[in-house]
Length: 252
Image (cartoon, rainbow, N blue to C red; front, side, top):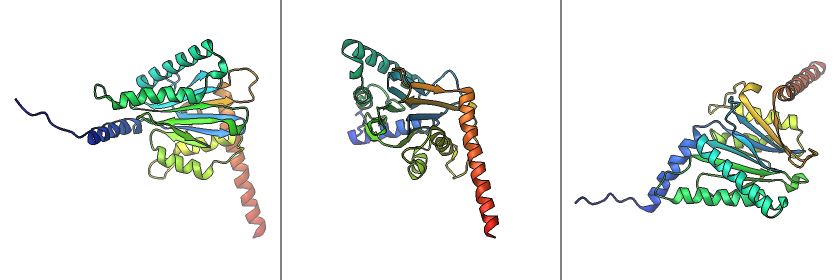
């Protein structure tokens, strides 16, 4: 009879974490930013059928990277949890914090179980408040931990580089067009510091708009509206560059 190969618990958990991180890093990134009227979600996703960003409840949205079938199961579970809690108690009892706790328990149980592989997913749960200071954004890595984020956050792909870029440039009170421009610029940067060109067809964009009159604040930004927002920022950038060039010429 052969002796079973021994692996320390610490090494086993480290191997599982590395496995999950590699799977998540292979996916395209998602960025979430606060702007003056709500929370903006932007993902590099050319598919119009397989969404990375989705509505969960009235003021709550969900974004994810990694294996689609795994985070889609989590999204469906979150919708069921929110519907049941809102129906049983009150709609105001459904919060991003409560949903994040449910996801954390699920991911933590799966990650620590030796009977199945860890989920290759990273999640963001966000809730828009009555004012910017009331907004909530939670990031949930593969191991079920919860990170309370503010301002901006990126997951998947080269998230560290994108997060650094966002931290240096994001500011409070940005308009939707300004936040979208910053999000697209951050997603367009590659690991070597170069930049790609991302079109409206390559992007999945949605917002939680606190000024929307109806109870449900989630809205997808599609088609002509998305193109107009991107074009308005391009035009503004060109006007700014032209003004700077004229100022330099006048000084000379």
